[in-house]
Amino acid sequence: MARAIWSGSVSFGLVNIPVELYSATQDHTVHFNQFQRGTSDRIRYKRVNERTGREVPYDKIVKGHEVDDGEYVVVEQEELDDIAPGRSRTLDIEAFVDLDEIDPVFFQKTYWLGPAKEEFSRPYLLLAQAMKKTNRAGIAVFVMRGKQYLTALKEENGFLAVHTLFFADEIRRPKDVLDVAPQGRAPRGKELDMAVSLVESMSDDWRPKDYRDTYTERVNKLIEDKQKGREVVVEAEPEAATDVMDLMEALQRSVEASKKKRKKAG
Image (spheres, rainbow, N blue to C red):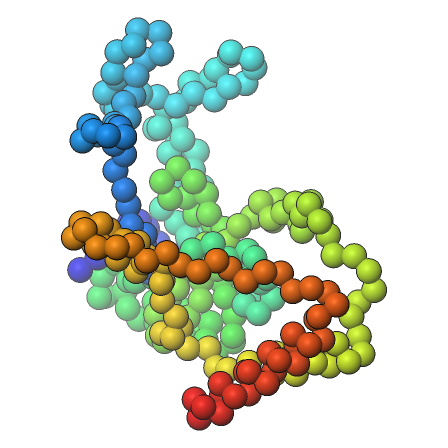
């Protein structure tokens, strides 16, 4: 069984429900150690005092924030815990909103929230069913591992899901980050009609199980092939950008290919 990564309570109105938080996802990324090229010597990182050159144990390290050039304010972990909202142990729902109103760019990560004990199941299920019936999500903030999170609580098949959200000032606008912004008049006419036709011909139901992390699979195969001395197969180069002059032809061929593919699948 998975272990809870945070425990506390969910609060809405005068109702307080002890809960535990669990990660809803897992990372399949292949992790590597570092070696000096041509040797079997591992590269390791150490916490070293820059003045003495000596390694410092973790329990002897404190946090410091630079407030001026070379001037730091030292803060103890206990001091951070003391000022955390709800002393880091409360998911305090401040409002219930329509989940559809939250732009997907705000979503960060998903967790499962469960009752801390069986005896707390009734208020837990009551909150879940109330949000399901009203199609609402509870907006709450809490602190975990030294960071405050904005969250949206949502009912998912009888359980509560916690979606961590970015704060508004953490979202960057496209015009602030894009080197090249799209220019010119909005497309219309035959090109737009053909593009719409292509989108419709490629439309399908959302089936997440149809997709998998193929890059991680290739990394694992690369490791296996190198281990067994097999030839490594190199992937093909990506397609070249479509010439603007050939855009209509490319759209037409794409629609035809998509229709043939769907007909064959059907």
